[in-house]
Length: 468
Image 1 (cartoon, rainbow, N blue to C red):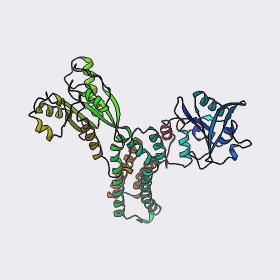
Image 2: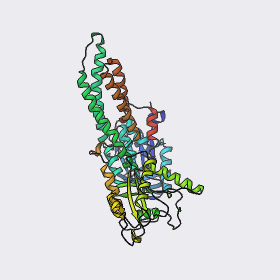
Image 3: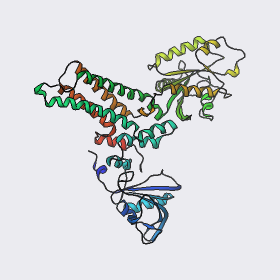
């Protein structure tokens, strides 16, 4: 059960626009008394009319009054239950963006009987009133927080129900399966087998395949949502900070001729062709000397472990092919995840007087040759980053999982499906198989909200912004 604060259907209000001064602001009111409460402070332009008699989903002009004194001239829209975002009566007040005006309107609404909404309470009410399922509600928060075309597209599709439909289809197949097993339990004394075991195994294998596809898509979905982490590594003074500044086309990091200038990791995000990349400029890799430098190198290895793509930058005029190979092997030992992508970048081509002996080897290793100082061939790096990411995209983007909670629930579902399959292989009784089936259905149901707990709802909606 959800807490009393969530299940009490009193009337709530909150600004739906960010804090600060702007041209306009929007204040939402939702609940059984939303229209009546707003009517007490609103005077329509047309005399003799009230909000309750005004047509829904039309914009009405008027003034907000306090003690017969006008506060602001506003535009007001009424949405009547169940045809609103929350499924309740909703009033949206568009006022001028003055902080004073917003505070006065909020004060008036609370004085007339509304209360200030908790974070995410409007969307929570939409979920509780059946306007959307739980995964769609979570996608609303992701849509608001989206910073790139990819994260926006993913959140929008999930909000529209693409992911929910897939989960419901899986759940329906499992329910059909469970129904046959439960039927056998009703006739257990007669030793009747309603479910053909070979057919059940075939169905389970199909469900397992779909679950694995969803689980594996999380690796891509998570970075699409949060941005792809890219670590720039290399020896001191090879131009890591200069390269970072060239990619961003602005001064993000201090550039100095002194080796070891970067003592900490510098992070920032750039959108390239609709995809967010989180770049990390790290301290130089070498045998650490002083204590501060040692901490910087340690942080570098931590950032390498977090990165999906590693840009290994080296000075082409001073680095031998043997040294490059040794460094790559060193990273292989440090990085446990062998799926990390490493891109070799040869910097300072502007200083070359002749083609180095290692040129052919570097070409075979798909090295990118750049001059970070002169910003030459930087586009080749961004093109390679896009190419590397797109190779990881699943065939069907509609089924990409981006939520850690969903990923964990799907993994638990798969674990219990595997147990069910083993049970059938080992000819276990229907009641034992049924137990794991119910547990698998439970975990699948937590994704869309078929099964919910107060902890789940509180954890999800407390992360929303107020007014959403």
